[in-house]
Structure formats: structure tokens, C-alpha cells
Image (cartoon, rainbow, N blue to C red):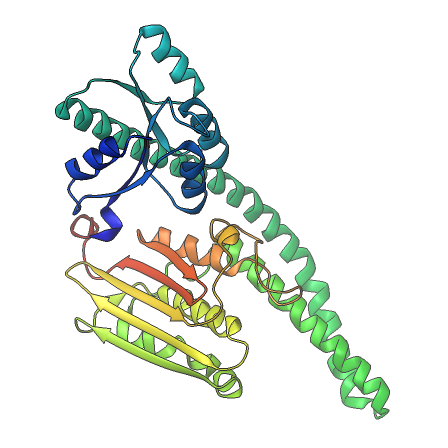
Length: 363
């Protein structure tokens, strides 16, 4: 229920008005915060996310016009409703140009407030959806261009890389000098890394595995971490897997997605820690959560982590294609992948339709 709450900020130097607004909005649908002046409101908006800000125009320290301009600078996604005691059409137009969505003129009725706030919330939600659609379209176009480039580059690199690797391996078998063998081993490791990058590029370009045969959910949860068991022991990382709601068939490509998420969780844990893979089944979907208690993803990186070639790992430890490929695979199956992270850890949530459920029923 908390995730569905609409977040309002009431800004007014009159305590009675602030209290009035707090009383009229039910707490099971709204979270209402208050500020007594524009400066306090600006500090709150910089720290928290709000759907709608209702602000008086005449206030000490920073007036309503100044606050609206500051909101545009801090977070332009916030919808602002201005309160004024001197309402004219000219004033309303001026406020709209400043960045206000609507104007409440004192005195206002309870119904007028509720209608205005409902309109502001709908505007905020629609604007948010439009921004998300625009972002997805831009990302889709970017992915298509990068995919074509990646396929061509990978193909051109793969053939000479294969030959170089064979010659290095053959030479390594015949050379006895320790220094020379050490140099060749370093070269071999570098070539292996290049090979991994080429494989990631090809997977990204082709979205390999998206049409794989269905797998049991138990099998996916059980097999996803198997390649990393040795590394987990070396780093003293514990793993816990749980399934609720019984077993079910899921798209086979989900195994690649969950395995990649487990690997990322392991990479986030320097020494010691815990990883959990939790799966649940309802009548049409499977939900898989991969959680770690690592240091978390920086807030400024969250909105970029599904972009191709974006990585938070140190240089030489990631191509930035893994999560982008996971998102491609999940969305191709008609599912979603989301992330929540703070200083106490990170949780990725994958939700996909069951493999044996018709698409109409899953929707």
C-alpha cells in the first residue's frame, strides 16, 4: 500500500491552513508533509520525491514564485498548485508561465481543493508515463544502432582473436623459460577477457537465449548460482534460495537473467556477505528477487544501470552490457525488471509470464 501513496507537500506560513490540508487527505492514500516557508520546502524537495506541491505565494524567506522557480531547478517532474488571495486571469497565466499547473484562489471549498489536487496528480502521473515512454523509445533506438555496430565489430574481431589465442596456447605449451611463460600467461588472460567482451557484444546484438526452451522455476533458481559456488566459498558469501507457490515453467532465457544478477551480487560483495534468490508463483506470473547485502548502487547510477556500456564496476571488470541484455530478454518475454538499492543492499525484481500460460491470460 505504501508504494501507492501520493506524496503531497503543503507550503504555507499559516499553521491552520497546513493543518487543514493534512486533515482532508486520508492517510491510507496520501502522505502529506508540510513546510512553513519556501526555503524549508526547497530543502524537503531536494531530499524527497513529491507528486504535488501546494504552495502559498506570500511567505517569508522565499515566496511562492521563488519556490516554483526553485522546484523547476531541483525536480521539474513535480506538479505545483499555487494558492493566492488575489486571483485574476492575468495572475493565473503568469503563474502558469512560471511553472505552476493550477491556481487555487482563496477562499476555496473542500470540493475545489480535492478536484484540483486530483487533476494535478493525474497530470503528474501522465507526464511521468510520457517521460518513461520517451526514454524507452530513445533507448530502443540507441540499442538498435549499437546492436548493429556490436555485431559487425564482434565478427571482425572474433576470427583474428581465435587465431592469436591458438598460437599463444601452442607457444605456451613449448616454452620452458619461466619469464616467457609468465608473459604468455598474461597475454592469454588478456585474450580471454577480449573473448568475453566479444561474446557479450554478440549476445547483446542477437539477444541470445530469448527464445530458449521453457525451464522449471526450481531449476532456474537452483542452477543460476551454480557456476559461482567456488567464488562464493572463496569470498565467504552465503547463498539462500526460496520458492513459494509451487514450481512452474518459465521462459528458458530467465536462467541467463537470474545467473547474471547473482554474478553482479557476488561482484558487489568484496569479502563476506549474503545473497538471496526468492521466487514466487501466482496464477499467471513468476516473480524472482535477487537480493544482496552489499554497499548498494549509488543513487546517481540507478537510472543508468540498464543502459548499454554503463557500468559501476572498476575498469577492466565489466563491459556494461549484462544488465542491458537482461532487460532486453525480460521485456521480450513480456516481463519487467526493476531495482531497489540503498546503503544496506540491492534487490533486483524480475517478473515474467509463466511459459505455459497464454499471453492474454498473463496480461
